[in-house]
Amino acid sequence: MKIFHHDDMDGRSAAAIVAASKKLQFLREIADSYGELSLADTDRQLLREYETKSIFIECDYASRCIDPSCVSEGEVVFIVDYSFSEKTVSKLEEICQKASSVTWIDHHLTSKKLIEAKDISHLDNLKIVIDMSKSGAALCWEHLFGTSLPLFVKHVSDYDCWKYELGDNTTYMKLGIDMQYNTPDSDLYKKLIGDAFLEQGYDLGYNIPIENSYTFYSLIREGQVAKKYIDCENRSYFKHYSFVSDVFGIPCICVNRKTNSWVFGNAYHEYPLCCVFAYNGAVWTYSLYSSNSEVDCSEIAAKYGGGGHKGAAGFSTKECILQK
Image 1 (cartoon, rainbow, N blue to C red):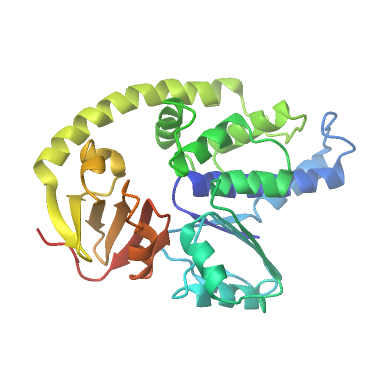
Image 2: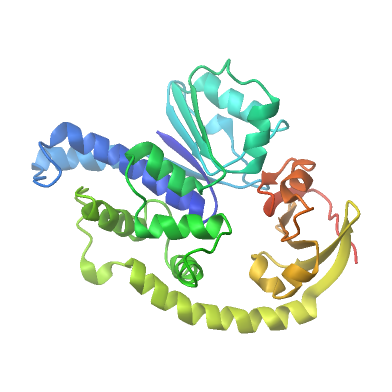
């Protein structure tokens, strides 16, 4: 099974949820009940072999775009928290031609516009879940488990959808996760998802020692310390490395750094468009942000083959498009 996911907290959380759902499905086949899970040595070996069959492929819209060549004939594929546009939908079609089944779960405006503008009903092995009201991780949880969202998924969705309805803990949790090794198959996600399932009566048998786990509230405490440092460092960096440019006639405050919108401080609300950008030796990558209701970042990104949300989107170019 291949799980393609976006290279951020929401994408990794979504991929981890997909893998956990498939593990739970496997456990159902070898255990009588979740609460009384007792695996024989043979079953544990089967479980370890099963876990190695889930391959996570992290993608972006620049140097690591989704690659259909990674898919084997007849393989099960999940694509989570990743958008396609009319310019890139051919990659989705190619994946569907090779895979036995494809489940595409996303919440980006670019994807919504694609399925409204283009008929892809001929892809009969493709299941689509598109909903802009929640994050990719939240959609994966609801689609695959059908239960209420656990605490950490609520905060992932709150952050990724730019709602911040849950207060400062949303930011702190994000930073706490960033400070840990956080690939979808990491102990961090196994613990977060394992705790969530135990709350809901499931047992995935992860057996992570409590002294080695990073619980939700420990992530919050670590994130609080990190945020103080980041705010101080961002103010200094913005002062020295920001400039105003023009993007399709829109005044844009730019910072030459691979980071998020926090670096702009108050300027995030003072300019109609904000952009962080960086060069990786092959391409220039850009992340657009806007709090202006008249600006659609996803439309700008789509012109360069990228995508995203109205308030945040990304793309890449061979040559730098920004000038002071």
